[in-house]
Length: 434
Figure 1 (cartoon, rainbow, N blue to C red):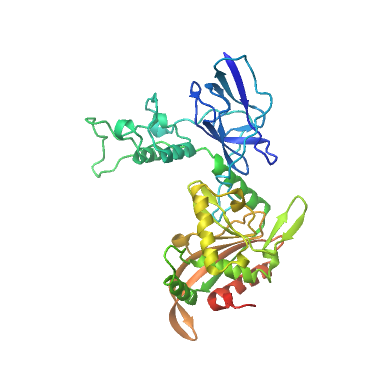
Figure 2: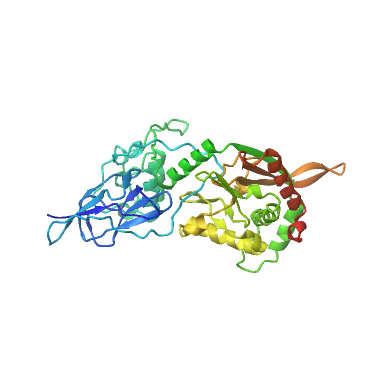
């Protein structure tokens, strides 16, 4: 056998280890040079690892969720012809734009489970599919289904495919992940059901915390452990803002990004933070220094298939309302599609977050370290309020904010939100030079 040892490559930027997110090959597979073998993740980026040679896979090190050090044996190949060799130095792999290096987001998360340093066994099939035989040959499934299964730690080889030629459909995957019984073969007796049309469910699903979700969990835990959060909630009368928003949206050219509340909020922040620079800052823990930023690089918490990411609208202070809206749309779509660059996912100085129609009454957003503040937009609803001594209906929206209480005093935090409230309640003042 002609043996070729491929070691975990140096992924740059001081990386000493990487997490295996998914294998795209298995022992015994014949691979060609440059074929993608695995997806690995560092603290900064998700990287696809190509095969350095053409040959047969003899062994793989680790499974999804395992950490492998740079320079450690990753894959052993049997190559055709030539003398036995071993790769002495790790091969340099150019890291593409990060698929997701998410930052803490407004919803609290549980800490990731502890892990050992050595290789761990591959994830076991979910109980819903444990009783089925393992398929042989090529598994028919869409890329989206394969990705969902990888993230859930589910082996598609044990999922019953009800589509043409045994193809695994979305419904098949939903059933396997939820623990439901897969569709019975034609002619098979139906599962017994109660007279009320109800059936018992049993079993559990175990989902390993790996990849992007692990990074989110670790960073959220660090943020809550290390940052004493000061929460402040204020209600804002956005009746006039809503009227202006609808007026401007009615005149947008075809294809232009519609105005939501976020562009107005970011434009107002650009004005307010000039008077509250302590809220547009980072804490550099290594140097024990607070770094106040003059420009506003606004992070926009965005839900993606990989989890919550924070793409950045850079130099919001120098953009018009429409330019801010277009940039929010551009970077958010890039984050959702996995095409955002590292520069588009890092460097925010303060983060805004919105759950849209699910905004609720109040939230407790978690600070996107090393930032000092995060502002959450809650649902805007019409409510009866007392205005000038009379009861009237106004559109009311809450702003839920969190501040790093080590460096932002409660008084300053409240004063900043009050100044923001004043601009949003009188939206014309956002655009009047100070």
